Length: 340
Ligand code: 5GP
Ligand code: MN
Image (tube, rainbow, N blue to C red; front, side):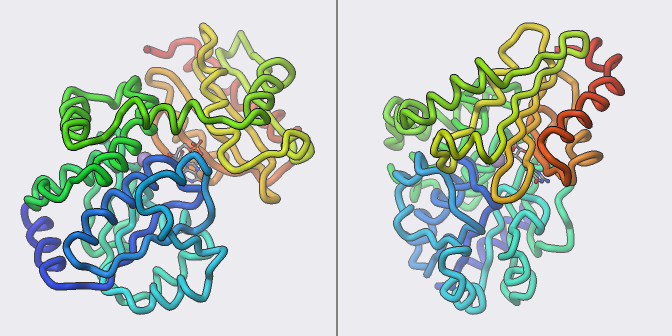
């Protein structure tokens, strides 16, 4: 660890062209980590660009520095030029290069020094020169904080940085309730509040700022689209492209819906399926020791964490539901005996 910190310290000792990138469909932790790091590095005089593979939910647009984010799918030429000129590329909140989608090749082909900071399982060792991986960390934002501490950069954690890192930790811990939340997490959160993060305002901006359509879509999902498989301790909520269109779907509108299925007693494994951007995407969530990342990897070309994972399906929404029913049956014994 000390060696990696030394290497990073020396990399950052002179003014550099730096790119910070994150996984496609960036969430609060991806954007919070990226912009937290961005707001530190600009104070050190570096030339920093945050490039995301695609767009993200508008409830993250208030994050300080968001106005300078470059979305690859919207400004391909500009992103390509900046990436070609980068000395350092930070890869945040993902462990496999494929999660950069169409931006992946540009990063792979760049000669920049690549620094990965992440908390996902099985980091691809071939894509980074310096790897900070901690699969026990609740959020990449927490690792970013810890690296800043080791670099002796804590003096650069101003209100902007604090609000970004707070958002990353808050969203990836389900507001500090998942088992990945530790005493250390709360100490870091306390420090971030001490450095100016307005915690109540941040919760409001992220969680109490929904459009009317988003809330109605949630109601529709719970009323009409929730299927419970009691004998298998499992549940599914699914949406077709037509249904999303009916509720004027905007990016981020379905975030968190899967968690409602998990609030039902005895539901250990919850799946949310949505037909988006010509793909059938899955969000898998579980309680206790039931590992959904294994399921995501084995059946849906995906991955993630033990209790939160995702992937894609090559067949229709209906066929995906049929496949899931088989999977539930296959894992019935495990699901019936999950330890919380
Ligand atoms: P979500 O369901 O919120 O989209 O994703 C939950 C978690 O699953 C993410 O934090 C990420 O770790 C993982 N995940 C989601 N989609 C994919 C995917 O396509 N591939 C991999 N490897 N992981 C994914
Ligand atoms: Mn994360």
